[in-house]
Structures are given as C-alpha cells and as structure tokens.
Length: 281
Image (cartoon, rainbow, N blue to C red; front, side, top):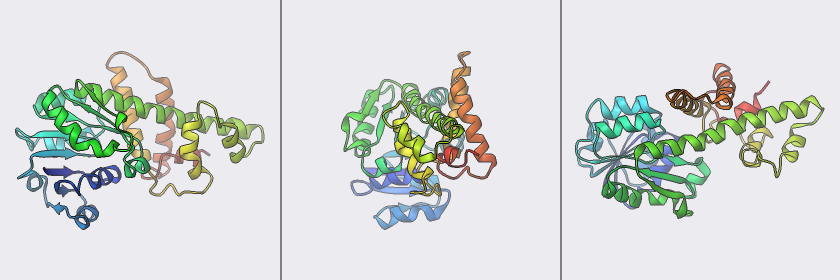
C-alpha cells in the first residue's frame, strides 16, 4: 500500500519503522533530518505534507498533539477522500471534531513506550464509525502489536479510542506521582532510594517502579528517555479538560500535572518523565 506517514518523533519513528518493509512509505517531519532512519530503510522523504500525501492511499499521522493535527492536516484539507489513521494522542472531543471534519478518520492511539514499540508489543486502539476503513487500518497497523495481537482492539468510534488512550496515560501520570511521594515518605524515615524501590515490589506501584527505577538509580539517562515530560503533561491537560467538560474533577491527575510542570519549569521538559522522581527535590 502507498502510505504517507507524517510525524517522526520518538514514537512516530518506531511506528513507521514497523511499516516500511511491507509498504511503499513516504515520510514527512517538520525537522527534516528525522526522516533519515526511514530513508535508510527504503522510505521516500517528502519536503511538505502535501507532497507526502500526493499519491497516498492511506495517511498515518503521529504528531505531538491536537493543535498540530489541526495545523498540519485539518485546516489545509490535506486528506480528501482518503482514509486517515491518526496515532496522535488527542481528547475524545478532538477525535469527534476530526471525525466530523474528515469522513475517513480512524483514531489509532498506541499504549506503551519505546521498548515495547520496538518489540511489537504496543497496545493499539483502532476507532472509527466506518467498519470497512477501521478494519483496513487495523490490518495495516497490526505490526505495532504483532507480539501481543490481543492488545489490538477495534472500538466503535474515534472518541472511544481517544478515551482508552487517556485512561492508559492517566495510570502513568498518577502512578509516577505515587512513586515520587513514596520516595518522599521513605526518605522521611531514613530509607534510601534503593530501599524504597525494593519495598515497592509486589505493590500497586510495581509496574511504574519497574519501568522507571532504572532512571532513578542511574542505570539509564533521562535524556532523551522513552516518554517526555512535555508529552505526558500535555496528555494530563487533555484528561483534565475532558473531565471538566462533564463537570468532573481529577484531583490525582491535577497533582501529577503540578509535578510535571515543576519539571518543565526546571528545564526537564524534553527528558523522560521519570524526571519527576529523579529530580523530585
């Protein structure tokens, strides 16, 4: 299939690499140098989004957030009658907006970080009202979840897919805040970071501890890491706005966002969000 892939950030690059061997891929990124890993694997680089989609049967986007989707895709009327698979993390309201603007919209957010992406172990939601387009997209993006195919889930709407992605990232946001506060509590009683990490095994925080302790303990660097502070802070704001639209509060997410924003203010926005625990002081 002739596919245009727009957006080659950390995750976008990994997603595109899973498709380049099986499809005729044309790629575009605002920073042109980021297309090189795909070009090295046989993709064609385009100078503009318009050039990228010119002959495409399917357009896939993996942009930073909904504002970038509007700027690059929706406002220029880039898609036309094509099917559009959007892996950008957006709110349910954004997904409804895009589905209304572009009949071929299918939302395809992924759940997981860079290591699972490289191993084909991501969770993938594929949401759209058009059954035929949704199934076609699910077939194309199946390599993203090839090692765990049961993690690829078709849902009946783009908004439902967006909700699933925000739920997944809510778990990350509130558990990294829990990890930070566990460290603060443990240190108040004279425990070391390693002691706290050990004691949190087999607790409700075990997943986030296993994921982020290597950064905390100096085994990995937060630069660039897997999932940036800026990205999850943006997602937390989407969560809060979504809940607020229904007159609901998310106090744990709000607390997590304050910690994330403190990292942004300290200059760690482009680093892994484990900065919340590593630079908690």
